[in-house]
Length: 457
Image (cartoon, rainbow, N blue to C red; front, side, top):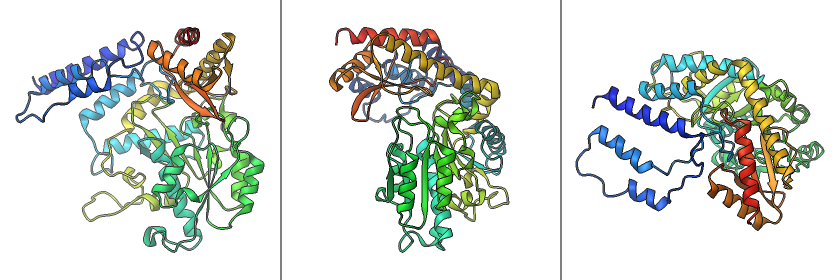
Protein backbone atom coordinates (compact mmCIF):
# COMPACT_ATOMS: atom_id res chain seq x y z
CA UNK A 1 0.00 0.00 0.00
CA UNK A 2 1.42 3.40 -0.97
CA UNK A 3 1.56 6.35 1.43
CA UNK A 4 -1.51 8.01 -0.05
CA UNK A 5 -3.66 4.92 0.47
CA UNK A 6 -2.23 4.44 3.95
CA UNK A 7 -3.07 7.98 5.03
CA UNK A 8 -6.48 7.72 3.42
CA UNK A 9 -7.20 4.58 5.46
CA UNK A 10 -6.08 6.30 8.66
CA UNK A 11 -8.24 9.34 7.85
CA UNK A 12 -11.25 7.10 7.20
CA UNK A 13 -10.85 5.38 10.57
CA UNK A 14 -10.49 8.72 12.34
CA UNK A 15 -13.50 10.21 10.55
CA UNK A 16 -15.66 7.17 11.34
CA UNK A 17 -14.65 7.43 14.98
CA UNK A 18 -15.49 11.12 15.14
CA UNK A 19 -18.85 10.51 13.46
CA UNK A 20 -19.67 7.88 16.10
CA UNK A 21 -19.04 10.15 19.08
CA UNK A 22 -22.60 11.47 19.53
CA UNK A 23 -23.93 7.92 19.98
CA UNK A 24 -21.12 5.85 21.46
CA UNK A 25 -20.65 5.33 25.22
CA UNK A 26 -18.36 8.01 26.64
CA UNK A 27 -16.56 5.76 29.13
CA UNK A 28 -13.94 3.49 27.55
CA UNK A 29 -15.26 0.01 28.43
CA UNK A 30 -12.02 -1.94 28.00
CA UNK A 31 -9.89 -3.12 30.92
CA UNK A 32 -6.42 -1.45 30.96
CA UNK A 33 -4.68 -4.80 31.41
CA UNK A 34 -6.48 -6.16 28.34
CA UNK A 35 -5.36 -3.15 26.35
CA UNK A 36 -1.79 -3.65 27.47
CA UNK A 37 -1.92 -7.27 26.36
CA UNK A 38 -3.10 -6.16 22.91
CA UNK A 39 -0.37 -3.60 22.54
CA UNK A 40 2.23 -5.71 24.31
CA UNK A 41 4.20 -8.80 23.43
CA UNK A 42 7.86 -9.09 22.47
CA UNK A 43 9.50 -6.58 20.19
CA UNK A 44 9.21 -8.01 16.65
CA UNK A 45 12.48 -9.25 15.20
CA UNK A 46 11.47 -8.35 11.68
CA UNK A 47 9.47 -5.46 10.28
CA UNK A 48 5.76 -5.36 9.52
CA UNK A 49 4.12 -3.85 6.42
CA UNK A 50 2.75 -0.36 7.20
CA UNK A 51 -0.81 -1.25 6.18
CA UNK A 52 -0.80 -4.18 8.58
CA UNK A 53 0.62 -1.98 11.35
CA UNK A 54 -2.26 0.49 10.94
CA UNK A 55 -4.87 -2.28 11.11
CA UNK A 56 -3.20 -3.80 14.17
CA UNK A 57 -3.18 -0.39 15.87
CA UNK A 58 -6.87 0.14 15.14
CA UNK A 59 -7.70 -3.31 16.53
CA UNK A 60 -5.53 -2.89 19.62
CA UNK A 61 -7.09 0.48 20.52
CA UNK A 62 -10.67 -0.71 19.99
CA UNK A 63 -12.71 -0.16 23.15
CA UNK A 64 -9.93 1.78 24.84
CA UNK A 65 -10.58 5.23 23.44
CA UNK A 66 -12.26 7.67 25.81
CA UNK A 67 -14.80 9.77 23.92
CA UNK A 68 -13.27 12.98 25.25
CA UNK A 69 -13.71 14.68 21.88
CA UNK A 70 -17.45 13.99 22.03
CA UNK A 71 -20.33 16.24 23.07
CA UNK A 72 -21.06 14.59 26.45
CA UNK A 73 -17.59 14.51 27.95
CA UNK A 74 -17.57 17.03 30.78
CA UNK A 75 -14.39 16.15 32.65
CA UNK A 76 -11.14 18.11 33.08
CA UNK A 77 -12.26 21.16 31.00
CA UNK A 78 -11.56 19.33 27.76
CA UNK A 79 -12.70 20.88 24.51
CA UNK A 80 -13.46 19.00 21.33
CA UNK A 81 -11.78 19.56 17.98
CA UNK A 82 -13.38 21.71 15.30
CA UNK A 83 -13.54 20.20 11.79
CA UNK A 84 -11.15 22.70 10.19
CA UNK A 85 -8.73 22.46 13.13
CA UNK A 86 -8.77 18.67 12.93
CA UNK A 87 -8.07 18.68 9.21
CA UNK A 88 -5.33 21.26 9.69
CA UNK A 89 -3.71 19.07 12.33
CA UNK A 90 -3.80 16.12 9.92
CA UNK A 91 -1.99 18.33 7.42
CA UNK A 92 0.49 19.39 10.09
CA UNK A 93 1.35 15.75 10.69
CA UNK A 94 1.64 15.08 6.97
CA UNK A 95 3.74 18.17 6.37
CA UNK A 96 5.87 17.32 9.44
CA UNK A 97 7.17 20.82 10.04
CA UNK A 98 9.39 21.93 12.92
CA UNK A 99 8.05 25.31 14.03
CA UNK A 100 11.32 26.81 15.22
CA UNK A 101 12.21 29.53 12.73
CA UNK A 102 12.01 30.51 9.07
CA UNK A 103 14.94 28.31 8.15
CA UNK A 104 12.95 25.26 9.21
CA UNK A 105 9.41 26.24 8.16
CA UNK A 106 8.44 29.68 6.87
CA UNK A 107 4.80 28.56 6.61
CA UNK A 108 4.66 27.39 10.24
CA UNK A 109 6.14 30.70 11.40
CA UNK A 110 3.69 32.73 9.31
CA UNK A 111 0.69 30.73 10.55
CA UNK A 112 1.70 31.25 14.18
CA UNK A 113 2.28 34.97 13.71
CA UNK A 114 -1.06 35.48 12.00
CA UNK A 115 -2.90 33.37 14.57
CA UNK A 116 -1.11 35.25 17.37
CA UNK A 117 -2.48 38.58 16.16
CA UNK A 118 -5.99 37.15 16.04
CA UNK A 119 -5.62 35.60 19.50
CA UNK A 120 -4.48 38.87 21.06
CA UNK A 121 -7.42 40.68 19.48
CA UNK A 122 -9.93 38.09 20.73
CA UNK A 123 -8.48 38.04 24.24
CA UNK A 124 -8.23 41.83 24.46
CA UNK A 125 -4.49 41.74 25.13
CA UNK A 126 -1.84 44.22 23.94
CA UNK A 127 -1.24 43.82 20.19
CA UNK A 128 2.52 44.10 20.76
CA UNK A 129 2.61 41.07 23.07
CA UNK A 130 4.49 37.96 22.03
CA UNK A 131 2.79 34.55 21.87
CA UNK A 132 4.59 31.26 22.32
CA UNK A 133 2.76 28.11 21.22
CA UNK A 134 3.16 25.55 24.01
CA UNK A 135 1.64 22.24 25.09
CA UNK A 136 -0.81 23.63 27.65
CA UNK A 137 -1.22 25.46 30.94
CA UNK A 138 1.80 23.87 32.64
CA UNK A 139 4.18 25.08 29.96
CA UNK A 140 2.35 28.40 29.65
CA UNK A 141 2.61 29.09 33.36
CA UNK A 142 6.25 28.02 33.41
CA UNK A 143 7.16 30.38 30.58
CA UNK A 144 5.22 33.23 32.21
CA UNK A 145 6.89 32.71 35.56
CA UNK A 146 10.30 32.37 33.89
CA UNK A 147 9.75 35.75 32.25
CA UNK A 148 8.68 37.15 35.61
CA UNK A 149 11.75 35.66 37.31
CA UNK A 150 14.01 37.29 34.71
CA UNK A 151 12.34 40.68 35.09
CA UNK A 152 12.16 40.98 38.87
CA UNK A 153 15.71 39.74 39.36
CA UNK A 154 17.02 42.06 36.65
CA UNK A 155 15.31 44.93 38.45
CA UNK A 156 17.13 43.80 41.58
CA UNK A 157 20.47 43.87 39.73
CA UNK A 158 20.79 40.11 39.23
CA UNK A 159 21.33 38.26 35.93
CA UNK A 160 19.60 34.93 36.55
CA UNK A 161 20.35 33.57 33.08
CA UNK A 162 24.07 34.07 33.65
CA UNK A 163 24.44 33.55 37.38
CA UNK A 164 21.60 31.22 38.28
CA UNK A 165 19.82 31.42 41.63
CA UNK A 166 22.66 30.73 44.07
CA UNK A 167 23.17 33.98 45.93
CA UNK A 168 20.29 35.68 44.14
CA UNK A 169 17.70 37.77 45.98
CA UNK A 170 14.86 35.51 47.00
CA UNK A 171 11.84 35.77 44.73
CA UNK A 172 8.44 35.76 46.41
CA UNK A 173 5.43 34.34 44.55
CA UNK A 174 2.10 35.66 45.79
CA UNK A 175 -0.82 33.45 44.76
CA UNK A 176 -4.33 32.57 45.84
CA UNK A 177 -4.92 29.51 47.97
CA UNK A 178 -7.08 28.10 45.15
CA UNK A 179 -4.47 28.59 42.41
CA UNK A 180 -4.01 25.81 39.89
CA UNK A 181 -1.45 23.20 40.93
CA UNK A 182 0.68 23.93 37.85
CA UNK A 183 1.77 27.19 39.51
CA UNK A 184 3.45 25.18 42.26
CA UNK A 185 5.15 22.86 39.81
CA UNK A 186 6.37 25.81 37.75
CA UNK A 187 7.88 27.27 40.93
CA UNK A 188 9.68 23.99 41.54
CA UNK A 189 10.90 23.63 37.98
CA UNK A 190 12.25 27.19 37.93
CA UNK A 191 14.22 26.68 41.14
CA UNK A 192 12.09 29.12 43.11
CA UNK A 193 10.55 26.39 45.25
CA UNK A 194 7.03 25.90 46.52
CA UNK A 195 8.06 27.51 49.84
CA UNK A 196 8.40 30.78 47.93
CA UNK A 197 4.60 30.89 47.48
CA UNK A 198 2.87 33.28 49.87
CA UNK A 199 -0.78 32.28 50.02
CA UNK A 200 -3.70 34.68 49.77
CA UNK A 201 -7.13 33.73 51.08
CA UNK A 202 -9.90 33.04 48.60
CA UNK A 203 -13.42 34.43 48.67
CA UNK A 204 -16.62 32.38 48.75
CA UNK A 205 -16.32 31.24 45.11
CA UNK A 206 -12.55 30.76 45.08
CA UNK A 207 -11.48 34.10 43.65
CA UNK A 208 -8.63 35.88 45.40
CA UNK A 209 -9.60 38.01 48.41
CA UNK A 210 -8.47 41.57 47.69
CA UNK A 211 -8.16 42.63 51.32
CA UNK A 212 -5.98 39.63 52.09
CA UNK A 213 -3.95 40.27 48.91
CA UNK A 214 -3.27 43.78 50.15
CA UNK A 215 -2.18 42.37 53.52
CA UNK A 216 0.11 39.69 52.04
CA UNK A 217 1.78 42.10 49.63
CA UNK A 218 2.41 44.61 52.41
CA UNK A 219 3.66 41.96 54.83
CA UNK A 220 6.70 41.37 52.69
CA UNK A 221 9.49 40.64 52.72
CA UNK A 222 10.15 43.50 50.33
CA UNK A 223 11.94 42.49 47.18
CA UNK A 224 11.39 40.66 43.90
CA UNK A 225 7.73 39.62 43.70
CA UNK A 226 5.64 37.71 41.18
CA UNK A 227 1.87 37.93 41.61
CA UNK A 228 -0.11 35.05 40.14
CA UNK A 229 -3.78 35.69 39.42
CA UNK A 230 -6.47 33.45 37.96
CA UNK A 231 -9.08 33.78 35.24
CA UNK A 232 -11.34 30.78 35.77
CA UNK A 233 -11.08 28.88 39.04
CA UNK A 234 -10.55 25.23 38.17
CA UNK A 235 -13.53 24.19 40.30
CA UNK A 236 -16.02 27.06 40.21
CA UNK A 237 -15.01 29.08 37.15
CA UNK A 238 -14.76 32.23 39.29
CA UNK A 239 -12.31 34.91 38.14
CA UNK A 240 -10.14 37.13 40.29
CA UNK A 241 -10.95 40.85 40.26
CA UNK A 242 -8.06 41.40 37.89
CA UNK A 243 -8.11 45.18 37.52
CA UNK A 244 -8.02 45.81 41.27
CA UNK A 245 -5.59 42.97 42.00
CA UNK A 246 -3.15 44.10 39.31
CA UNK A 247 -3.24 47.63 40.69
CA UNK A 248 -2.26 46.26 44.11
CA UNK A 249 0.56 44.30 42.52
CA UNK A 250 1.86 47.41 40.80
CA UNK A 251 2.10 49.20 44.15
CA UNK A 252 4.73 46.60 45.07
CA UNK A 253 6.49 46.50 41.66
CA UNK A 254 5.32 42.92 41.16
CA UNK A 255 5.36 41.08 37.87
CA UNK A 256 1.74 40.01 37.33
CA UNK A 257 0.97 36.69 35.66
CA UNK A 258 -2.58 35.54 34.85
CA UNK A 259 -3.33 31.83 34.66
CA UNK A 260 -6.24 31.95 32.22
CA UNK A 261 -6.21 28.36 30.96
CA UNK A 262 -9.91 28.48 30.08
CA UNK A 263 -11.32 31.58 31.78
CA UNK A 264 -9.35 34.07 29.71
CA UNK A 265 -11.56 33.12 26.75
CA UNK A 266 -14.38 35.01 28.49
CA UNK A 267 -12.82 38.11 26.93
CA UNK A 268 -13.94 36.87 23.50
CA UNK A 269 -17.64 37.00 24.49
CA UNK A 270 -19.09 40.47 25.10
CA UNK A 271 -21.56 39.12 27.65
CA UNK A 272 -18.79 37.53 29.75
CA UNK A 273 -15.87 39.91 29.16
CA UNK A 274 -16.58 41.78 32.41
CA UNK A 275 -15.35 38.69 34.28
CA UNK A 276 -11.79 39.32 33.05
CA UNK A 277 -11.88 43.12 33.07
CA UNK A 278 -8.36 44.46 33.48
CA UNK A 279 -6.61 41.32 32.25
CA UNK A 280 -4.81 43.38 29.61
CA UNK A 281 -2.90 45.20 32.37
CA UNK A 282 -0.91 42.12 33.40
CA UNK A 283 2.60 41.24 32.27
CA UNK A 284 2.07 37.63 31.16
CA UNK A 285 -0.75 35.20 30.58
CA UNK A 286 -1.26 31.48 30.05
CA UNK A 287 -4.19 30.19 28.00
CA UNK A 288 -5.14 26.86 26.41
CA UNK A 289 -6.27 26.25 22.86
CA UNK A 290 -7.37 22.66 23.45
CA UNK A 291 -9.98 23.88 25.88
CA UNK A 292 -12.41 26.53 24.65
CA UNK A 293 -10.86 27.14 21.22
CA UNK A 294 -11.54 23.45 20.44
CA UNK A 295 -8.28 22.60 18.68
CA UNK A 296 -6.81 19.09 18.96
CA UNK A 297 -4.45 18.21 21.78
CA UNK A 298 -1.94 19.52 22.63
CA UNK A 299 -2.03 23.29 22.33
CA UNK A 300 -1.59 26.25 24.66
CA UNK A 301 -0.26 29.79 24.62
CA UNK A 302 2.39 31.59 26.69
CA UNK A 303 1.80 35.30 26.17
CA UNK A 304 4.00 38.16 27.36
CA UNK A 305 3.46 41.93 27.21
CA UNK A 306 7.22 42.55 27.12
CA UNK A 307 8.81 40.86 24.10
CA UNK A 308 12.38 41.58 25.20
CA UNK A 309 11.76 39.92 28.57
CA UNK A 310 10.03 36.95 26.95
CA UNK A 311 12.96 36.39 24.60
CA UNK A 312 15.60 36.91 27.30
CA UNK A 313 13.97 34.28 29.50
CA UNK A 314 13.54 31.66 26.76
CA UNK A 315 15.93 31.98 23.83
CA UNK A 316 19.34 30.48 23.25
CA UNK A 317 21.86 30.56 20.44
CA UNK A 318 24.14 28.05 18.77
CA UNK A 319 26.38 28.32 15.73
CA UNK A 320 24.33 25.84 13.72
CA UNK A 321 20.95 27.55 14.33
CA UNK A 322 20.64 29.24 10.97
CA UNK A 323 17.87 31.81 10.82
CA UNK A 324 17.85 32.77 14.51
CA UNK A 325 19.06 35.85 16.33
CA UNK A 326 17.36 38.50 14.20
CA UNK A 327 15.45 41.58 15.40
CA UNK A 328 12.07 39.82 15.23
CA UNK A 329 11.63 36.92 17.67
CA UNK A 330 11.19 33.52 16.09
CA UNK A 331 8.73 30.97 17.55
CA UNK A 332 11.65 29.06 19.03
CA UNK A 333 12.67 32.16 21.03
CA UNK A 334 9.41 32.11 22.99
CA UNK A 335 9.01 28.54 24.25
CA UNK A 336 10.90 25.79 26.04
CA UNK A 337 11.26 23.49 23.05
CA UNK A 338 13.29 23.74 19.86
CA UNK A 339 11.87 20.60 18.27
CA UNK A 340 8.19 21.43 18.22
CA UNK A 341 5.28 20.53 15.96
CA UNK A 342 3.51 23.24 14.00
CA UNK A 343 0.54 23.88 16.31
CA UNK A 344 -0.19 27.15 14.57
CA UNK A 345 -1.83 25.52 11.56
CA UNK A 346 -4.71 24.13 13.65
CA UNK A 347 -5.07 27.36 15.64
CA UNK A 348 -5.17 29.43 12.46
CA UNK A 349 -7.77 27.06 10.99
CA UNK A 350 -9.96 27.14 14.11
CA UNK A 351 -9.98 30.92 14.19
CA UNK A 352 -10.76 31.07 10.49
CA UNK A 353 -13.61 28.60 10.93
CA UNK A 354 -15.14 30.44 13.91
CA UNK A 355 -14.32 34.09 13.37
CA UNK A 356 -14.73 36.54 16.24
CA UNK A 357 -18.50 36.16 16.31
CA UNK A 358 -18.30 32.38 16.28
CA UNK A 359 -15.84 32.35 19.17
CA UNK A 360 -18.09 34.66 21.17
CA UNK A 361 -21.10 32.47 20.46
CA UNK A 362 -19.18 29.32 21.43
CA UNK A 363 -18.22 30.75 24.82
CA UNK A 364 -21.72 32.08 25.48
CA UNK A 365 -23.37 28.82 24.43
CA UNK A 366 -21.16 26.72 26.72
CA UNK A 367 -21.98 29.05 29.61
CA UNK A 368 -25.70 28.79 28.87
CA UNK A 369 -25.42 25.01 28.72
CA UNK A 370 -23.61 24.96 32.07
CA UNK A 371 -26.47 27.00 33.56
CA UNK A 372 -28.92 24.53 31.98
CA UNK A 373 -27.03 21.68 33.68
CA UNK A 374 -27.28 23.42 37.03
CA UNK A 375 -30.99 24.19 36.62
CA UNK A 376 -31.84 20.64 35.57
CA UNK A 377 -29.95 19.02 38.41
CA UNK A 378 -31.32 21.48 40.97
CA UNK A 379 -34.84 20.75 39.73
CA UNK A 380 -34.06 17.10 40.43
CA UNK A 381 -33.36 17.92 44.06
CA UNK A 382 -29.58 18.13 43.94
CA UNK A 383 -27.42 20.85 45.50
CA UNK A 384 -25.39 23.10 43.20
CA UNK A 385 -22.38 24.16 45.24
CA UNK A 386 -21.11 27.10 43.17
CA UNK A 387 -22.34 30.19 41.40
CA UNK A 388 -22.35 29.21 37.74
CA UNK A 389 -20.70 32.17 36.03
CA UNK A 390 -18.77 30.38 33.26
CA UNK A 391 -18.77 26.74 32.22
CA UNK A 392 -18.16 25.00 35.57
CA UNK A 393 -20.81 23.31 37.72
CA UNK A 394 -20.24 21.64 41.11
CA UNK A 395 -22.85 19.16 42.34
CA UNK A 396 -23.24 17.66 45.82
CA UNK A 397 -25.06 14.40 46.52
CA UNK A 398 -24.95 14.48 50.31
CA UNK A 399 -21.99 12.88 52.03
CA UNK A 400 -18.65 12.28 50.31
CA UNK A 401 -19.07 8.53 49.91
CA UNK A 402 -22.44 8.94 48.20
CA UNK A 403 -21.04 11.61 45.88
CA UNK A 404 -18.19 9.33 44.79
CA UNK A 405 -20.64 6.45 44.31
CA UNK A 406 -22.88 8.54 42.06
CA UNK A 407 -19.90 9.75 40.02
CA UNK A 408 -18.74 6.16 39.51
CA UNK A 409 -22.26 5.09 38.50
CA UNK A 410 -22.53 7.89 35.96
CA UNK A 411 -19.18 6.97 34.45
CA UNK A 412 -20.18 3.31 34.18
CA UNK A 413 -23.48 4.23 32.54
CA UNK A 414 -21.59 5.76 29.59
CA UNK A 415 -24.12 8.43 28.64
CA UNK A 416 -21.73 11.13 29.80
CA UNK A 417 -18.54 11.49 31.82
CA UNK A 418 -17.89 13.80 34.76
CA UNK A 419 -15.13 13.62 37.33
CA UNK A 420 -14.97 14.37 41.01
CA UNK A 421 -13.19 17.06 42.97
CA UNK A 422 -12.70 18.17 46.55
CA UNK A 423 -13.60 21.80 47.18
CA UNK A 424 -13.93 23.48 50.55
CA UNK A 425 -13.59 20.09 52.24
CA UNK A 426 -16.45 18.43 50.32
CA UNK A 427 -16.45 15.82 47.57
CA UNK A 428 -18.36 17.13 44.56
CA UNK A 429 -19.13 16.18 40.99
CA UNK A 430 -17.38 18.61 38.65
CA UNK A 431 -18.94 19.39 35.27
CA UNK A 432 -17.11 21.42 32.63
CA UNK A 433 -18.85 22.36 29.37
CA UNK A 434 -16.24 23.19 26.74
CA UNK A 435 -17.07 21.27 23.57
CA UNK A 436 -18.31 23.11 20.49
CA UNK A 437 -20.45 20.09 19.58
CA UNK A 438 -22.43 19.94 22.84
CA UNK A 439 -26.15 20.67 22.46
CA UNK A 440 -29.10 21.22 24.78
CA UNK A 441 -30.15 17.65 24.06
CA UNK A 442 -26.74 16.42 25.22
CA UNK A 443 -27.14 18.32 28.46
CA UNK A 444 -30.67 17.03 29.03
CA UNK A 445 -29.61 13.43 28.35
CA UNK A 446 -26.73 13.89 30.79
CA UNK A 447 -28.94 15.40 33.48
CA UNK A 448 -31.28 12.41 33.14
CA UNK A 449 -28.33 10.03 33.43
CA UNK A 450 -27.16 11.70 36.64
CA UNK A 451 -30.61 11.61 38.18
CA UNK A 452 -30.93 7.92 37.26
CA UNK A 453 -27.64 7.21 38.96
CA UNK A 454 -28.79 8.94 42.15
CA UNK A 455 -31.80 6.69 42.68
CA UNK A 456 -30.12 3.34 43.48
CA UNK A 457 -27.19 4.82 45.41
